[in-house]
Structure formats: structure tokens, C-alpha cells
Length: 144
Length: 281
Image (cartoon, rainbow over all chains, first blue to last red; front, side, top):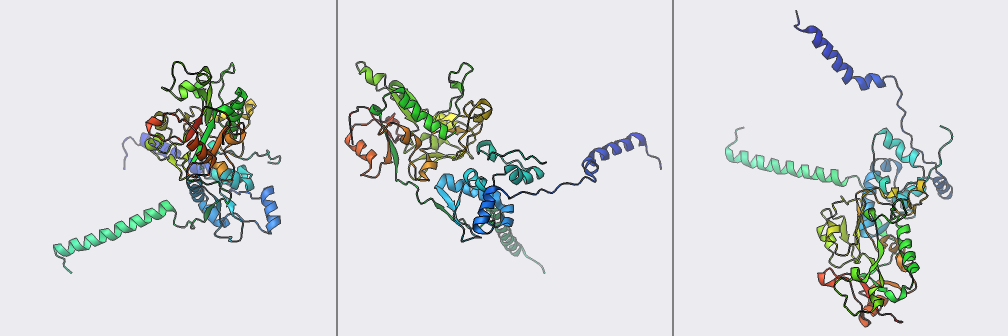
């Protein structure tokens, strides 16, 4: 079987495959570090000491999946209905939480880089919270 | 099984209703997040509440320029309002953002000046801010409902929702709204690189949104009065519930002659100016 203009066609296919498969062979064998958000800020450690356990406003698993929804709900509830306190569903005995990103969440999670950015960067999500909200001051970690 | 035309139409009608219903239900779950727990939210116990917040500005209590500056600075520093300056240090009017500001009688009350009016009134600087109108033009024109009325009479805005169309700025007859032409964090008073400092308890705004006075809703929610009221000279700015017959503002509005800015426009401004002076209430 003879293929007319075989040379350019196969060259074209090769170039196409080289480009299309670039992400695969470029990352082949590289270990992609799993994001590991840290929850060991001084405020959280203090909370753990006082209450005997670490707890967020809801369970860890739920927060992992739904934190963006709750932030949206809070935002509307705060600016439109004056609501400021949130009673936890999963820890009914916990004191009401202050519904605020800047003065609520980030008071405990003062490590934005290791808490927020760790996963957001991994998933290439770029929320624009920090265009307006002021992120907590963080000291540069010495060890890398 | 054979189907006549009538059966076919019945069958397909019912099927499409079921299918459509399921799609709607699915879409609703997607949008609202069906796993979301029922919200258990509440107001702070110390929240200051009113039926209609209003303010009386007693001009006789503002004696010096410092009284004005002190009030303006208190508001602007708490709310991270950018202060853009030209290289020579003069305020850059092009990028000006203001929540509360000083102006002249002529500009505050156009059409009310008269030929032989006392120089005292004519030259008197006035403290101006958002009028938190009963029937605000800005709310009417906002295409995204980013600005809206709170049940206590405050004209509030949701910065998350503002698209920066500036209809509200065109609609507001009081010039109470300012647009962020550039990132406010670049202003010398907010940029740490230029020696500025932000208030970490309050957000800044971002480039491309409109902002104005909020009657300090964030302070009302924790039981504090607005920042300007607390820093102005005693009795200069009175804040209270206009619907409460025993409140100080109501007594003054009832018993004294106060004027409002451009009431003829029908917006129902809630800032009352007491010009005369002397001791009251």
C-alpha cells in the first residue's frame, strides 16, 4: 500500500501527538505533592487546649466540600439581614460563631498560605476574596 | 401494543411534565446546594435596632476645621477609605472616594441662598454624607440589587454584587457615591509600602465598585453607634430612631426647624440639618 505524500502526513501526525501529549510526558514520573492544609495555628491550639478538641463550625469533611457555599450564605445573611452569629449543626454545644471571613474564619485559620492557598493553588482555583478582605499577616516560614 | 394519536399525545405530555419537573428539581438542588444544612443564623444580642435610623447634624457644634477633619478621619480610617494624593500632596480629586465630607452651604442646599443672607451661614462649611433616603434613587436604578434598603432605613450596598456600572452615582442627587477607579490599596494611606495602614477589622474595596457611607452597619451590629457620631464634638451629630417619639432626633426634628438637602426631589433624606444653633434638647 502506498500513501501519497506520506512524509508530510506522518510528520504532521507526529507533531500533533507531540503537542497533544505534551502535558502527559512532561509530568510523567513527577510526583505531584498532595495538598496538605495545616490547622495548627496558635488560635486553634488554644481552642483545642480549652475545649479538648479541634472543631470548626461544622465537620471537617463537610467543610472541605461546602465551605464556599457557606461563605456565600453568610455573606448574604450578614449584609442583607444583619445576622452575625452562626449556630453549628454538627456541634450543637459549641458557642455561636461569628459570621465573618476576616474576623471569624481567619481569626482561627490565620495561616492563609498553608490553609487556603494550599488547595486552591493545587486545584488552580482563584477566589477573589482577598481583593477586598484583608488577609491575616503571616510570618515567612524559615524552614522550607 | 399499538397506540392511537390521542394516547400518544397523553403519554408524551405526561412524560415531558415529569422530565421537566425532574430537571427543575435538579437545577434547584445544584444552585442551592442540596446537602447544605438548614441555616441557624441570628443577630448579635447587642445589635442596635430601629424602625428608621436618622441623623441630626447640629452645625453650631462644629466650631473649627479640626472638628470636621477629626470626624472625617475617624470614618475614613475605620472603613479603609483610600486617600489619593497628587505628587505635591494635594488631594487627587479625580480618584476621590468619600463617605463623609465637608462642603459649602451653596453646594449642600442649592437654591436656598439669598442675597442678604448672613455671611455666617453662607460661608459655613457643612458636614455631608449619604442621606439614607426613604425612597432612594440609587436603589431604583441598581441593575443587580447591589444597593438596597435595609428594614431599619439604611441604604446599604453589597460590594460582592456591585458590577461598577455607576448608575447609582448618576442617580444620587447628593453626590454621596464614589467609584474606585483604581485599586484603593494603592493609596498612600492604605499601602504599607508607602507608609499606610489598613484597619484589619474591615475590608477594603476593590477596583471597579461604588462605595458610600453605610451608617456603620458593622458597628450597629455589635452595639456601637456610627464612628462619626462618636468622634464628632458632643451633640454635633445625633443618631437615633426617627420613628421613636422619645428619641433625641425625633424631638429635635419635631420641635426645631431643621432643613434637609433637596427634599423637593422626593427622595426623603434622613439627615436633618439644624442650622440655627444655641442649646437644644
